[in-house]
Amino acid sequence: QVQLVESGGGVVQPGRSLRVSCAASGFTFSRYAMHWVRQAPGKGLEWVAIISYDGSNKYYGDSVKGRFTISRDNSRNTLYLQMNSLRPEDTAVYYCATEWEWYFDNWGQGTLVTVSS
Amino acid sequence: QSALTQPASVSGSPEQSITISCTGTSSDVGYYNYVSWYQQHPGKAPKVMIYDVSKRPSGVSSRFSGSKSGNTASLTISGLQAEDEADYYCSSYRSSSTYVFGTGTKVTVL
Image (cartoon, rainbow over all chains, first blue to last red):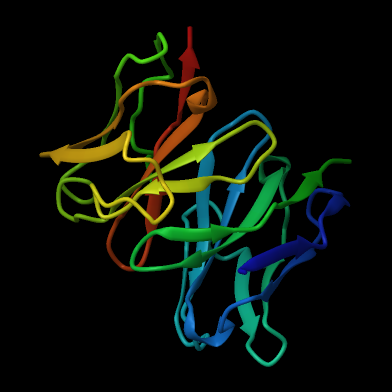
């Protein structure tokens, strides 16, 4: 069965960097576009970024554009989100999700990133 | 990127029907038939309930249905059950491979 496991979350100071990962299994990872979606504590879902199946195309939400970079390693079945210049408002649970015909099909359980001094 | 607008809360008694609205613009909900709905229980990951405005994934109860008129999409839950109590989010494709979520609706079963 499809499994997505996020990792790498933690507490980081404002202005610093952090990379979170999403390990995929149970499906052919290299055939699917992938998303990152985040949810601040007690708040709603916010779309963060998408990467095409082969990594050639990447798109971002306005709030993270220029600071975050989505990438993937299809040989390792792993999705990444490099987060630079972190701000307190980036504090959230970060979910990875598979893309299937313009909707978010399978989701991981998320990893919590806390930006605080 | 403004979020799609949903009511903050909707409630109903068991076996009743409720409808959650999701209002966007002519650049997202009104233009594309790529509206989806997600159910999220506390502390859990979201789960897709409806995609492409009105299609149900395998395994999702037929009590859940979706529709769209103009810039507003709707999710209807018929025969409301206790396990339907959760947060619900709509989402729409918004051109150039970007997406947007709704503000979220808390459904309470009275």
